[in-house]
Amino acid sequence: MTVLTRTIAELRNALTRLVAEREAHSVGLVPTMGALHQGHAALMRAARADNPVVCASLFVNPLQFESPLDLELYPRDLDADMALCEAEGVDLVLAPEVEEMYPNHPDSPIVRVTSGHMGQILEGASRPGHFDGVATVVSKLFNIFDPEGPARLKAYFGQKDAQQLMIVSRMVADLDFPVTIVPVPTQREESGLALSSRNLLLTEEHRRAATALSSALFELLDRAAHGADWDLSGLRRQVREAPDVILDYLEVVDPGTLLPTESLPALALIAAYVGSVRLIDNIELPAH
Image (tube, rainbow, N blue to C red; front, side, top):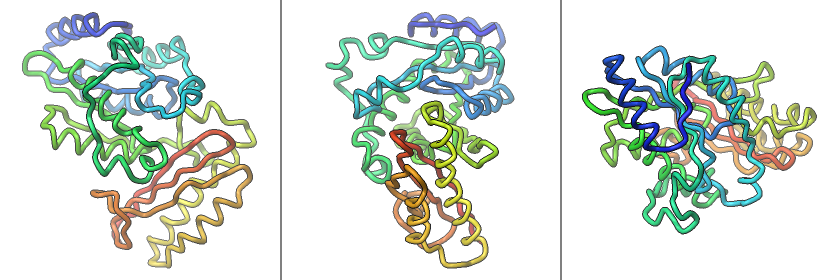
């Protein structure tokens, strides 16, 4: 049975008991903003396979949103989220209110974690402060879910949010968090569209149009595999021609620095508005 906790103290008490009862050597954590889908389920299954205790967080983090309207419209369904957690064998869920995580918000937190230059490019350039919000809340969650005793924390992140994954991994390395980051491959619909909570906001027409993002990435992967010209300008034009799609960026970057590269291995990233919904996707371009 999945136990729902609403406060940090409640979560810590329940986690301490569970780790002791199961003599757990590790705890798996799946940090989320709710609106769970099969991509999150894949993270939970990976955590369940690795750890005697599995936890998840459901928290729509206001620090990640520049637009108050975007924050307000972000989908929320606690009952459905808890049902998915139950189905995937999650032991403990923390679903706090904003005041629990950030007392006196918006005047807090005063001290925040910066994502540095990695958080100021690509998605960070279009969403100023977003990755500082990610780094701050993830660092809090790592502290909140840190198990007592010899047990170690493992945190599971989807590769769909590649820039987030890289920033969190770098934060763990730079700040010496005793946490193991476990990447989990992107989950896709049959159409190729990457699973995302924001897909819930798409109309059927826009859902079809959104496949232009993954189509461009798979075309780029094919070209890179065959040593052909990447022709990013042509692929950008192709995405812009899709109905109701406004391309923000399509770039190929070094996986370690996020800086543009013309060498393999590399990472291709794309972001666009489909209607009013912002979507991101990426794909690895391996060396020949």
